[in-house]
Length: 437
Image (cartoon, rainbow, N blue to C red; front, side):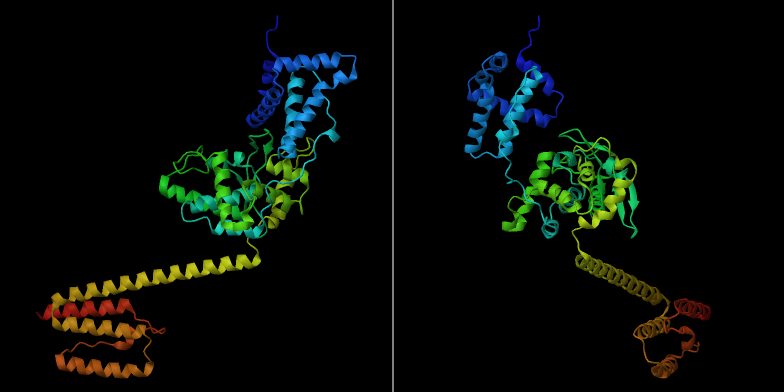
């Protein structure tokens, strides 16, 4: 004899659904039976008797209870979607126990949209630029990945470093990189998400992973692509909370902006150039079982062509970013040149110190050559060269120096000092001085 209760049968059925769906159905169902002070088995018997009754009014008893409870939920300020959740939960309970529950669509509350708003491109830019110094690269990468993929926070939390690094790469006509992931089984529905990322997300994620490598060393392919403060995997809750916290930078415009707003941005923007079924495949929603553009490269091709709808940096913004990069590159170049000049100064100073041991005349000659070198670096006019030659002549006479110092041989056509000839000159002079001693 079967001793399983009606609730046990239902739990067997719910075990095949996602964790989120199970939790939602149980929450609605428990509120319903608590409201009418009835047990699951009592509700089962009530519906079974109602369906067997010859009185049509008795047959609608449980239906009227569900409709009344929905109205109470609406009157208490709950959304239409929450009220309809009661129907889904009770109907699921009866389906698992072989009973029907019929509630017409017209008797169910119509959804009035009051959820998260679609975030705008300029708002995403503001979030990106105001993430703060702490976890800056992580948060920027998170924003860009959510924007380009359209994934739920629960699915972003499933992505590992290896998923990103081993994703197939393609390029558009401009040579920009795109990544195509292997299908990811979504957490909520189990439907596969065919994740695609564009250049903006790739640049941000690459920068973030490079930062992690500097801090952690080589990254394990199995480690989460996004980590929390303590180093563990970022959960769906922590990702959602972080994106929600960032919305404060939008001020009053941040009202009802959350991580899900980026998912809506992804869908709304792509609809201008892609059909809804294909967008569903990107986001991991249910789609036609007969359409498989992911297997023919059509899905990737469509995403690449439509990516300009997801870009948050407009042409003007791109030019600004390009100018910023040029300024940074120029600063870096100047820093390198400054470092090179400093190294050259140190080398000259070292040479002077070495010459001190070889006598005052060698030191004087060395100083003169260094002086000459410095004057050439300042681009001395050609007409001043005779004055320098005359100065050298008088300098040699006063000190009894007989060696010739051919200034013209130290100068190349581009008026830069020929350091190799200077070194040879000094070497010969030093050798002669040593021979005389």
